[in-house]
Amino acid sequence: MTPGDHRPAAGRPVAVLANPTAGRGRHRRLLPEVLDRLSAGGRPVRVLDAYTRGQAEAVCHEAVADGAAALVAVGGDGTVHVALQAVAGTRVPFGAVPAGTGNDFAVETGFPADPLTAVDTIAAALRDGRSRPVDLARITTATGEHRWFGAVLAAGFDAIVNERANRMRWPRGPRRYDLAILVELARLRPRRYTLRLDGETHELDAALVAVGNCASYGGGMRICPDADPTDGLLDIVVGGRFNRRMLIREKPNIYHGTHIHHPLVRSYRARTVELAAPDITTYADGERCLPLPITITATPAALHLLLP
Image (cartoon, rainbow, N blue to C red; front, side, top):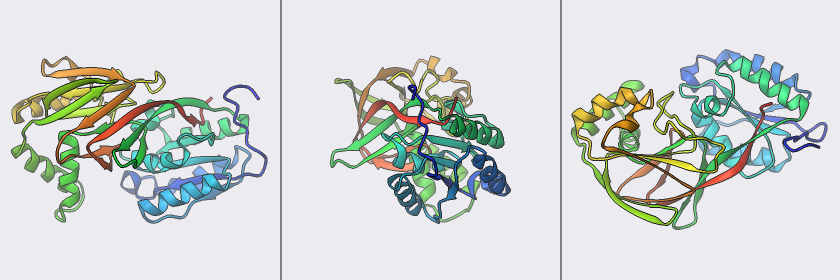
């Protein structure tokens, strides 16, 4: 076997985690075609049954422990995030079929944006026994709890908005998130953060804090535009004492990554990030994650992607 050749033993199945509600269900009918094309990779295919996030994580871990030839996630960044918890740090190769509202990790790491083209790419990699290593970020709390993420961890205004939206029972759908933005904009105030970057301490007031293994989150917002998931480093972007008007005005620039030129924005790069602030629950890959304080560590080649 050559380096990057992860040809599994014959007969071991490819486990598939599919989220039928990803992308508001617009790719729901694609699953039979996805499974047919994956079978062209020469392995039996097994769909994992799960109805909640907790169940999904459990069945992914079980599939990996049972010797799955590979794990494939069909959905958006949230589905990918769940699957990563099982394959991170293992030799089990992973494929991402971008079928969600936000597909930042899949696209940033080289999977085609079209779901069926991505499936064909994954099937070819399975057939040829090829994979490509990429970095992941490992989050650890003071009590030893840990999680992995692939794209971006938010620990500022975006995380606060998500937390507000998750607590709301009305309205339903995207309007709930829009209302949460309005509520938190009215309450906007910079928070005091302590950052330790490879042992160097920074005390600062900030409205935005993001730690990126990849460049984008939220469906293409390039919050950490220079992040590279193969360099063994994390990119940290901090937006300082923004007021409401400044934050609203700057948001469109995040899609292009030009916000880093704003005088209140600072960028850093480090292997290890220790992050602390009061009353903040982080969101990683768009999913509710761990409360601060946390330590985030860049982990080179923690994941093997089914790419040529």
